[in-house]
Length: 388
Ligand code: CAA
Image 1 (tube, helix red, strand yellow):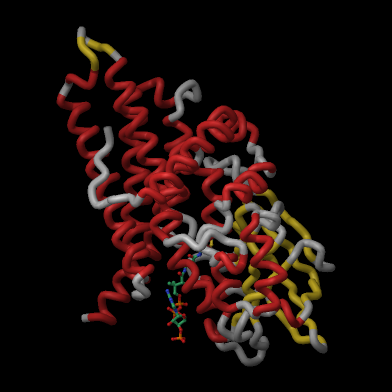
Image 2: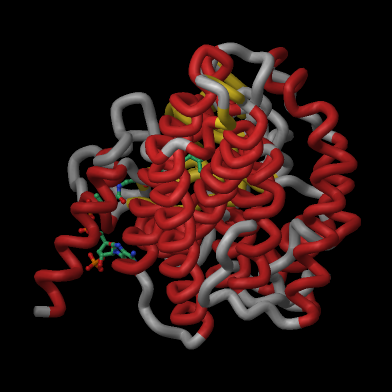
């Protein structure tokens, strides 16, 4: 039904896509509505994803991962997101951010202690950059890390941390410069934090419009003592590591957005064939046909850009600009397509009996998290100036 231009999947990719789709329909779809209504995070999915290898998709086999390419990971993520985008957050954040940061900048000891169990799905990973007063301007964060012998003492509040209450390993960005000698983006470190550290506390749980099956929390770090061997890489380069990792993370958000948009499109096609008004199925009317044509075009364009970007990443090219473009296009597509879907369903699109209202609510945050649409435009524009 849906055009798949530019996506020539290998046999292995098709098989992983099938595994992801079957898993999503068996283990997630029957419960999605309840999880959304109740704001329930299904922790057992972590081990189940782990068994499939889906929490180590981009981690080399030597660290117990599957060692797959980016496109294969995104194909699997889209399948999960098509069924439940909130569940896809678990998979997306873990694969794109904390595991990649440890893989890229961690010591061998950190990889053995944290990355291996993360790849197997024994530890769930999270990422803590934002703060109540530092969102788009992430470098203005104020959580402070202070040296105490070999340890670091970290104090501050991190905000908008996806599954920060359920994670076993959280990469926390904190200032490593001092209040009397601030160095902006060059005075921030990244630390491997576990919830057993003294001073670690989960704070406010957000009550969200959408993605309700994925918890979002604040973390209150009160003189949290972090052993020195938990610092990642250069203690003043944590912000650069975080932004570089967000280049990957934004590809995951794009795949998730495409999943949401695709689901809204597929529900709309089906409904438009069944719903009759004025003596005919509504899909026979041009007003609906044109909507479906535009929805399909935008989903296909978003996927084509995303997969071209994934291929560039795997060739080792710098993808900052294309990653932001992929996230921008896909997330605005998700919001637009779900808006059209609600319109096609009419009153039924506005109530919880049908799935499109959830898709509409879930879509909104893709234009906000891992960098708002405005920040994506800023990144794209900056890269334009630096290359012209
Ligand atoms: N790759 C590599 N390095 C990069 C980079 C990238 N993509 N982007 C920036 N850098 C480097 C810069 O070169 C610079 O390094 P040098 O000083 O050595 O030259 C350094 O990082 C600082 O960069 P900027 O000067 O560009 O920093 P800035 O303060 O102007 O901010 C910004 C740039 C793009 C606005 C950035 O702050 C940003 O992306 N903001 C949005 C934050 C965001 O996405 N937050 C989401 C948090 S995660 C989340 O949503 C929740 C969750 O659970 C997943």
